[in-house]
Image 1 (spheres, rainbow, N blue to C red):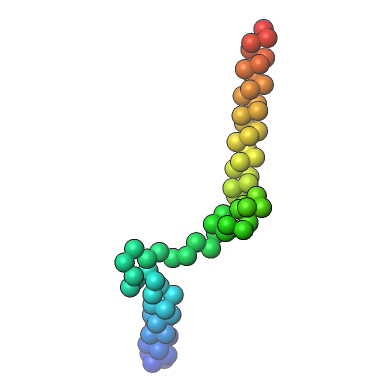
Image 2 (image 1 turned 30 degrees about the vertical axis):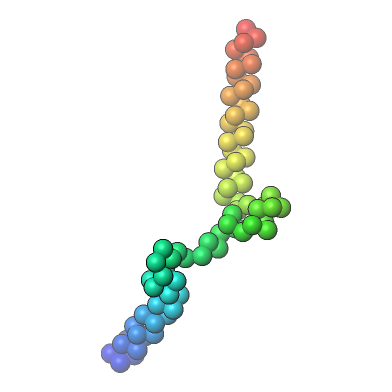
Length: 76
């Protein structure tokens, strides 16, 4: 049982090192950006992640509502 745990821990450690070679051993290394917003081809097509698109939609709704209120106040 202990042998299986030790082998699992060693394999996990090796896996983490292999995934992080660029980060751990290269000066200024970073993990690659795999987020949808970091993909140039999708960005050129105007495609973003759902969270970003929702945030932008909520912001534009709020700005439209604020403009409508300002217009109503000016017309009084």
